[in-house]
Image 1 (cartoon, rainbow, N blue to C red):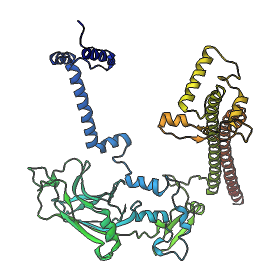
Image 2: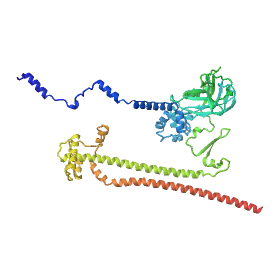
Image 3: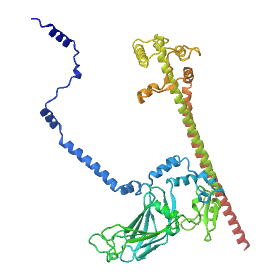
Image 4: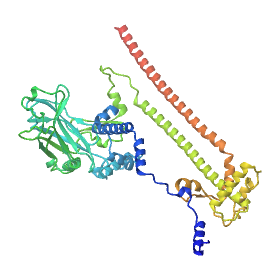
Length: 573
């Protein structure tokens, strides 16, 4: 019995409906117990434990390396800190242009009499860098006095001053002093930046023992406050008081000097914000301050906190060395009455002979010869640098030009294939690529003679490369190709390129003949540079040897003259 018409039509539509591809069908979901069993069988407890142990070991190593980073740096570099921070990086990159502009040439502008006293003989680049907090100011710490130190008997004390990434500075040793008041005669010079990123200045009092030393107390001061106090003479002296620790919990501080631990003891520390130091230097009434010193060991309780007296001031060095930067030909000395004398370096070496450890005079190359050799070395270095720059520039320019011309020639060759196959223009890039791929397969399978559509010759390409005005037959509806467009699209995902100029194929035909000469020229430049370097090195050694022989001959002649005079004097006697 036949089915009704509606039923037959429904069955026909179901048969005509497209069936889903086997790859697009939803995979059969496995049962949960089977999946759990497979995961359990695939689990390797030994491998998991080994991975956990490795991760824990690496994490522990990194944590220990960070906690004891000072000791790690001491082992790796011989120093316990990295002498640089973000401000140094900003100054080197932005302020000095990666070291190419130090600003020393601006000193010739600030030596004019019309310049203000504040910038007289100053480096203007560093002067503006100080305003932005990138270059440091120079501050002196004077009249240093410590008192109420957490020590019970006579001891040997000294100070350690640390700021930013600079090396730690130490005072002289105050031997056999009572801890009630300890005076230090030094004038310590520190460099601070006017920036909130500058680390606080840390001052630590240590007590020297037979083996090493121990921190007693410390103080931290803001560097901007220090600069502010430097400008106020009546506020230069500061006091910071605090407690200091000497003993471990359960120990008494009495009789501590009779049981000194190995090493030196840090009695107390003081950390000062560098920006506050700069503020104090700017205010004459705030240059003298007395600071509290925080204890290193918090378990010790003293009757009164330890303190340190400091005076902050701008450098008052008699020789005014801040204005001597960039002068490499003079030695500056100062007398007791404040007279500054700049002596030329060659005259200075003649007046003050070079002595060895026993006080005997030593032979030394004259400054004139050193200056001549330095001039020759600078000329040679400049010549080598110029030769290298010219060689690299020529190679880069030729390589870029050659790549541009070759890219344009490849595109014009593809358009010539499409034109000779009577393709419709404008042609899409996808269609053009299909034609090129088809020609490549055809040439690989059957081969093709030169001048056929799949192997156009130079004349065919030249005809399409030129416009109608230049004697060519480039299609009017087709847009000019752009070099490096394929690379930009495939690598960068950009629809960009360099337009191919009219007649670029002619340039390509000329450049092809110079490829060998260009490679030979580059190799020749490198070889010539090496030969010139060897020649200059040999010439420098020859000049040094000649000057040494001349000095030896002159010295021998002087000795012979002295010996002859002594013989003549002995004969007369």
